[in-house]
Length: 112
Length: 113
Image (tube, rainbow over all chains, first blue to last red; front, side, top):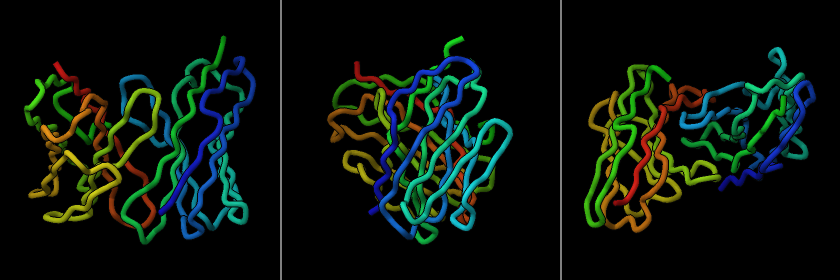
């Protein structure tokens, strides 16, 4: 089955700096890669996703890149703000599978 | 997510008791999922259902049971066979069409008395 590894497990940055979180996956058939943000005591919420037919997608301060050959994808947050502090999860999904596989999460802390 | 309601928010169980966690959705989504989250860890899939009256085991199904009698509802029962049930339980849905994101409820925190 699919295996997703996420790094780093914790990340601390100064407000205004950029943050990068990386994930690798094992199943070359995976073709959908969402990123979720989880705030304390809440369920994860989708922040951005990318499908395997594109290499990069951007939404304001958030971007995701995908390298299908190397089987890794990354989340980039620019101009970080304290409200970006949360746990971020990556996931990978194969169209033919009924389920997604999640990474173990990254706790991002943005210091004011 | 306002379209997914998990109840109760906090639940306490005595050892040896079965408890049922509720998950209701009004998003008209075909697929529903149950995840377990332990402190500082990721999401582990317990059960999922892609259509009414059908469900599949996830990675950690032992000690849990589910039913999917209605599209809107996917209750999870934590049985006495689950020896370490203390965790945060998350329900999610997706539209079932190709490569759509999951929508999560706000979870139920289960603790052993």
